[in-house]
Length: 207
Image 1 (tube, one colour):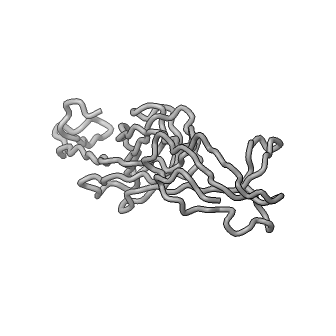
Image 2 (cartoon, rainbow, N blue to C red):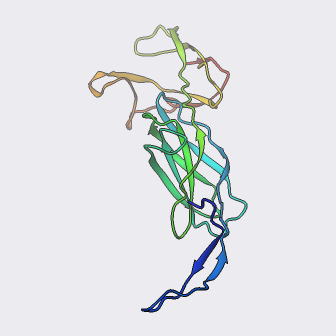
Image 3 (cartoon, rainbow, N blue to C red):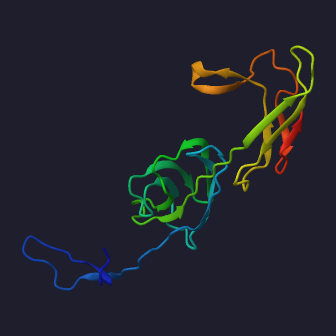
């Protein structure tokens, strides 16, 4: 710790005694912390995270070699898990989708010099965005065997802040894989099974 010290003193010493008058240099305490951390959760599943973390670099970056980003359980960086390192000049890092939330509450960003990593990070409280539609209904008005046609409707999620589109698949029950519904996959998937350009705000689809 710096405490109240103002100078570094260097004494020469012989086998007999230490020099009486030292050479000194004034201490200049370097401070380099990021600011303005920003992140929006683009993984819309419950308890999963994903999205681009950005920040504003320190005013002085001459001694900074890199930035280190972690997920942590406190703003002080306790019980943290590394997201990754980026070099000076890059002020963002992608948190991959489907990253487990676990008990993390913050992103923390440290600067690192050639000597060591910063002790006190800058923190950003994260928010897990969960956006799932509800009240899905479908009435089949195509009366032919093995053919479907009708109106598919749903209620939008409570939080649509990060929703840009709804993606609709035909699916089959798949309890063996621990998933109640599995989208159709493989060569027999027909064009139109993935309808990916239904805009946010729509609550229906004519099938």
